[in-house]
Length: 196
Image (cartoon, rainbow, N blue to C red; front, side, top):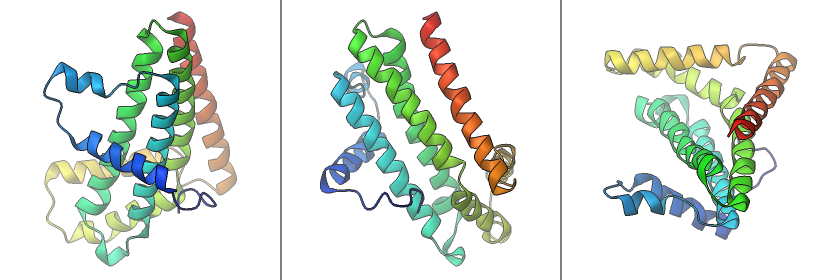
């Protein structure tokens, strides 16, 4: 489990996760569709941030729980990519609101949401369990599954990114790396806010 001790999502979180899944999977075909992605109040920003974290936790827990024999490119590598992309949708939306909203309350809530999601992202994706699940696929079924050159490249680059993030370091050094990553992320968001 990605968030030890977080427990299962409650019914409100499950509803919010389902709404996010629909939002993430609905094509944007008009300006009206794009505008619907953006929360209109600070409370909606807080809810979207929490729902996105619950969604990511649930999806990564599902990915990690797969047996090695069940792993495929689609349910491991592609799933990992989609989870990260969907987190980015919320993060980028918050960043946009933080940078351009004329409402100070919205800007402040969006900035806090950015900081929260960035710190959460470090814990969720620089995660030994997720790394081991991805590596199990790369070391196992990826050798026998028929993959395109692009898919193999994605696997190589993701494994390289895991290594660069510190996932092959001893636990104490990994924790220090994660702590520094969170600090840098928060400083970058603060800097962007100050020059805006």
